[in-house]
Image 1 (cartoon, rainbow, N blue to C red):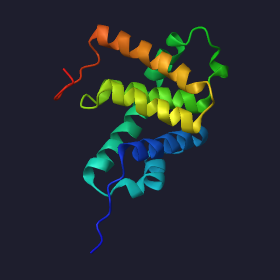
Image 2 (tube, helix red, strand yellow):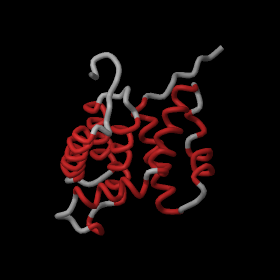
Image 3 (cartoon, rainbow, N blue to C red):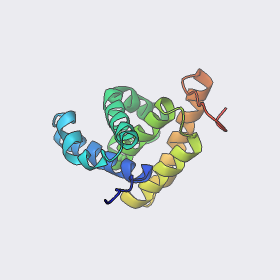
Image 4 (cartoon, rainbow, N blue to C red):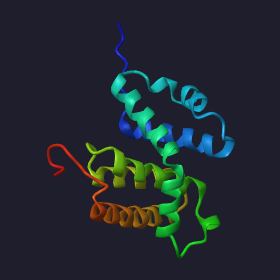
Length: 152
């Protein structure tokens, strides 16, 4: 009997990035995209739940995250921000707010690593600045609450 190894959260984030890009470009039904592009992540419920929550929470909060991106990138014209960068920012914002068990530092590092791999040379620095500003604002407002050992 072969035991399948559970994909890492980084791999799941990569798959979610791809699925959100497909959604951004096609505007197809999110459930169809999720089932098509993320079906192989259902190895274990934990993995599937993370992928499911990240993907659908980003879509559910699309307008709110876009508004935050506009406010925090006021010195950038919106058309100058790469599509991948916007998606990564939404993913980071989503994790910071809705995934209380994931340390903010981990979220920031993971999103920046994805930017290094999938976006422009200047994207990691831009994304880091926007996500840090978002994190500081949301901490002050009480919207971000981290829980668990070492997160309080």
